[in-house]
Amino acid sequence: MSTARIRAHRRLQAFRIAVFVLLGLFFVVPLGSMAAYSIRVPGGGRTLEFWKQLGQDPDLRGAIVTSLELAFLTVALMLVLLVPTMIWVRLRVLWMSRVVEFLCLLPLTIPAIVLVVGLKGVYAWVTYFFGDSSLTLTFAYVVLVLPYAYRSIDAGLASIDVITLSEAARSLGANWFTVITRIVVPNIGSALLSAAFISVALVLGEFTLASLLNYNNLQVVINLLGKSDSQTSVAASLASLIFAFVLLVMLSFVGRRRSARRATIVIAPAPQPMKEG
Amino acid sequence: MSRGVRRLAPALGLVPFFGYLTIFLIIPTIAVVVGAFVEKDQASLSNIKALGDNVVLRTLWHSIVLSAESAIIGAVLGALLAYAVVTGKPDGLLRRTVTSACGVLAQFGGVTLAFAFIATLGFSGVVTEAGRDVFGIDLFGSGWLFGLKGLTLVYTYFQIPLMVIVFLPSLDGMRVQWREAAESLGATTWQFWRYVAGPLLLPAFLGSTLLLFANAFAAYATAAALVSQGSPILPLLIRNALTSEIVLGQSHLAFALALDMIVVVVIVMTLYALLLRRTSRWLR
Image 1 (cartoon, helix red, strand yellow):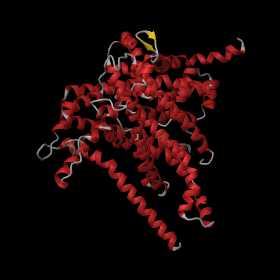
Image 2 (cartoon, chains in turn red, yellow):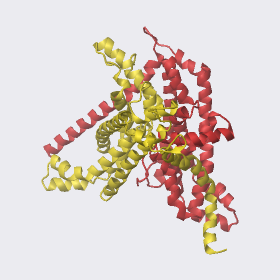
Image 3 (tube, helix red, strand yellow):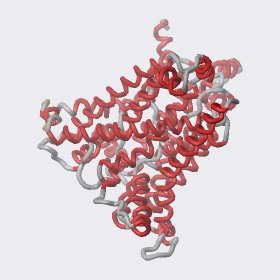
Image 4 (cartoon, one colour):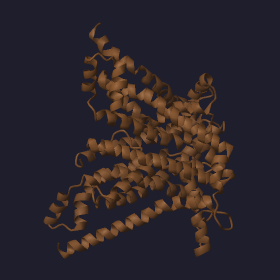
């Protein structure tokens, strides 16, 4: 290597270290501050008092349960709605695949704050039929998680030969229901798992729809709590954040295992729009 | 059975899916567009006219400035971070850690993010107090964190990781051979970036910036948790219009404002799609 090359290399290394350290600080400091804020005592000292509050505050406990129930119901409804549809599209109605894809990715381009304006009218009917429960948010959340779930499941289906599998099963006498539930679904397990993970993470962090449709979920209650007891609310935020972190890191491992088998893109859980490759 | 029926019959399996999306996605979207042209149960242009009101225009302008600032800062810093990542080992631990962290942090928003910054730079935030006690400087100021400047800073927190995710593939598409070819022809580093890499990456960079713009423009939860007084940006004005019956003398203003947002997002995303088509020609 010439001296000029070596100098350029050193300069690059210095640049990289500077970028990692400075941006690393920018990302770590707020998280560290949250942790420090949630355990400090005014005037000095530390306490875990506010973390204990998480399990004791009745509103917060109720909200945690509601949000977990919402996460579960959303995943269940999303899977029931999306999985058979997507398999069916690949098997029998391929000419509709562009339309289905377009509809699934559409929520990415419609901001939640816009959707909620239109949903107000629909929710008047939902309340009429299902009662005024926070759990009715499930219906809207399924739409919200649709693009992310679609991407995961689509990648899963692309990695197996759905047609051949189903033809084999059909020729052995399986009906369509058996093909979907016992042949295809077991083969896209990791894709379904990652769809479920990202859905849970999104539902647990959802605020816009719940607060503007006047329902209580975890984030709404944390936000309310912030006005009266800021330290407990910060502890709750950090707890929900850590939970989502763990879920999404697990997701990135599930995604990597699949992409190792097939050299495609990893499903980055990011709000990318519809046209990307 | 005729051929047409045989072709269409399997499509019946899609009825539940389309039915569901009609109710919870299509109807709400149409309701927004139609609702913008209705006032007191009658067709009316008064809500659309109200969009020309000074308050609305100023709020829209704030939204655009906030989105543009956070998009540009996020794009530049995100691109630097992405470059720092690509120049490392392709399968190194560093790269895997950064991309995973970015995947998570790009999703990080809303109440939690707002509270993180309140715990950091709020009146009794950890960094604010450290600044006060140790350095004797007042970082809180007059509460800038809860205004547009604060929102720009807080939005940057999810914009940078998003930029890394969307820009990394383009940087990966750059070939070492291009650099070598340029060098063997006697190009300096500056010339390489100015005449080769720059022009190649520019469409991808601008496209990603537009995506970041749309992302910030659509964000609501973070701002809602951070700003409890006033409505400096469009999503918060929609909140105001939804929670109080009448704003600017209009009962359907929320619909018109939402339509306003759709128009901006559609324009930005169309530009994005056009740029992306240009990008994909070179960087595969």
